[in-house]
Length: 434
Image (cartoon, rainbow, N blue to C red; front, side):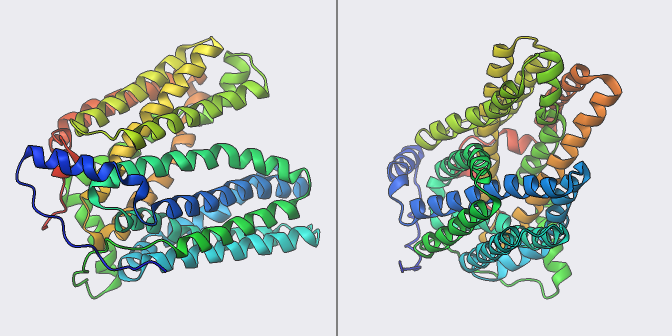
């Protein structure tokens, strides 16, 4: 197993030229960073398993019940335990070995795939067992999110973090696009085969993660004595750090107002007049745009005017959604969604990088847990907002309101979070008290 010994600390930078040369030197070696590719493929295998399983278990439960409400319970069984456990999970991530926590989380998810395999093999017609396994799966996922985001800065140096996050996000899009497709194909041969593949993917993720060295772990500082103080310390740090509060709240409201995914089936049928194939293309367009931009950012990281680029990307996201909202032409709608996905990838890359750089290593678990809580809530509430707005005002006005709202948020956050706007280089961002 590779050594976990931290490398020597970086020499101090003495000028602008030194910063540029240092960043360029390490960026050229981002693909050769020890353990980084193993980490990428480990996570790719796990996300493929999750995406395949999400499609198969929903399809199988609906096949058994023929009740649309059962699909809501499939999501609820996973969402509720995850929300309840996120903050305690963040605390544990900051107190114990993150790689071991991730291994335990993926091992538990592998157990869940094995249990689903057994339920499917026995042809169980009682969906209660499926809901119980999914609740256990949601418990495991509560630890996966904060751990993954907090572990990456311990695998790559600060100067490589933006490119590492971009490549990581791009690779995950491959699983998001391909996983559901593969899940559908596998289910045609039976749920047991699909769950067996998921189990194999989780086991592969565990094996690959074993060879990932943790080389940039920082010395832990003394922590608060009580669990409540440890939980609230992360929230307090976010409130006191304008850059972190700005990126988390911007993400919350941009997703809450700007998302149009929930409206795509209505647009495909009633506005663009395309069939299921057209709907699939519309859903894939966002992911394709994000994938292409993620690969680009992995090769050419953003160097200057980081704050302005992030706000501009969110504004482009809002404008692209407005174009989609008003378009009645399929190809124009498709292009608008590709641009929206690419713009969102830029803003996500910058937001995640700033979040990691501005947070002390011994608090990343708790801060990332709060961020995951907001992301999960914004996704769920965003779909609810889009659906209720469409019911009240109509589908096109609902999408227009979302796009205009996103642009309004950009304007308000530009005014209200000046330190975030003024960030020029990632290297300028340091955790408070460091």
